[in-house]
Image 1 (cartoon, rainbow, N blue to C red):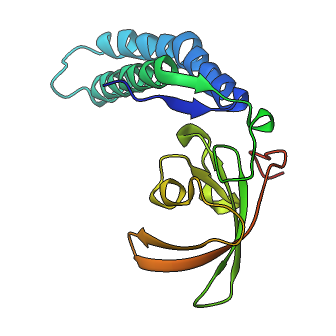
Image 2: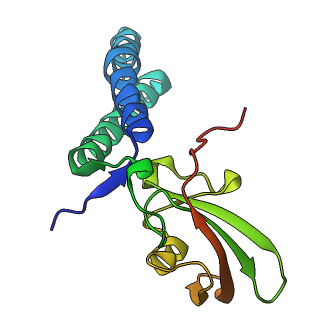
Length: 165
């Protein structure tokens, strides 16, 4: 079963740039490092050779992972979606009913998420349980650290800022 990876154009371009860097810069450098280490002779005790081979394996694994993500990607422009209910790209302002703490999250693609600045993955436990809810709803969500109750104060679309400056 193919899983669709929703993401914005920003996320798609960011992953493509990583693929380009891995293919055109990091992997060729790694191959040079392996060739250079081979010149040192005995491979059993050649730390540079083993480190370079390990790096090559990590690069190849990441390229395979990125290929799968990009192959499953579906570019979504959140500004074109209706945000009466929580969906991909929605910014949600909600209140923790136990602490009265106000929280703001924006739901983005997995490769775009950055919880430290309020960007949570579409596939995260919290986002999955918020999808489809609307302003005024009270929701109990099961999270890894227990059950939390929130009141949805506002659901809106606002331009997504992916990086802190």
